[in-house]
Image 1 (cartoon, one colour):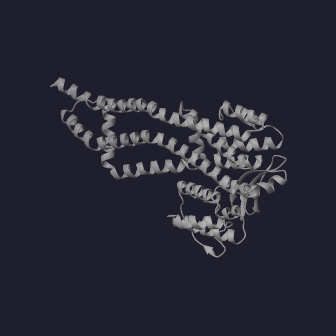
Image 2 (cartoon, rainbow, N blue to C red; image 1 turned 30 degrees about the vertical axis):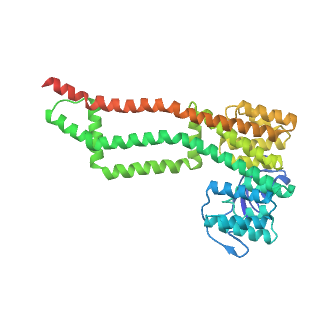
Length: 404
């Protein structure tokens, strides 16, 4: 496979290269042997293989839950004494996902042809993450593949549960805001025109707020299609924007400055980094490679860049905790202190595991409390929305009634 790699050289300069290797893990090893470090690594276009042996097929979609189930089942069967190829064959027959069946068949073929399991996994970078491949390689080299798969399954499961809890906490306010927007448009289309005709029949001077709402109503009524299309474009554009590098960075920066949300974001990122790094180190992955892979899992953002810097500083002989100590506004003090204790006792992996457990539980508690905090804020927002509309549209009615 060919990879496009952004490399930081020993003199601090950056350069892009195309490197051919079996796995991303091998790319890290090759670059680090040259005394350099990897900033980003992506599969080069046209460089990946969509086939193993004579098996060829197009793309497909595999849910995270299906990946987790695949990993758990494979670990369980290997622990029970089944050979890798036979375990893959059983999983292929049990799976309901056709694409996963094809991937599993391809992996079975590669193993039978003499390739190592992690080399087979590397042929599917969109299905199996660098974390998955690295931990599998470490498990194969140590002769504890079943244990490594069990660890990575637990890591994937915890990460998925954490993501679901955070997203779940955002569903309620999102539904309320969308409902308010829809109700507002319907009122502008059907309620306001009726009241506007009543005001017009009296010919009285209307307050500024009332005139603004009536003008908005006229625009919506006369441009229904434009309003609907504009609403869809704005929502779609926003969703597309936050998926870009600039958009996600801006959204993250805003989230970090919002009370409660900012702390929740920091703890979520700390839990993800701790869980990933702990899993890699406990499986026998070398420290520098573990940090690099963790930076990819965390993402190309300010949290991930701290890990890239940590890799550079560890390579120079500094302790891992020193880097995180420089960024107390991103990674909590407890995170840094626990790593420092781990470095002193030689149990970094265990300390990171405890940190991950602590923040995962704390994030779960905070997401439960979040709905309690958001609910009164939403009620105030709804009250303000209704109050403004009532004052703007109902107050003139009382004024007109008093003049009669």
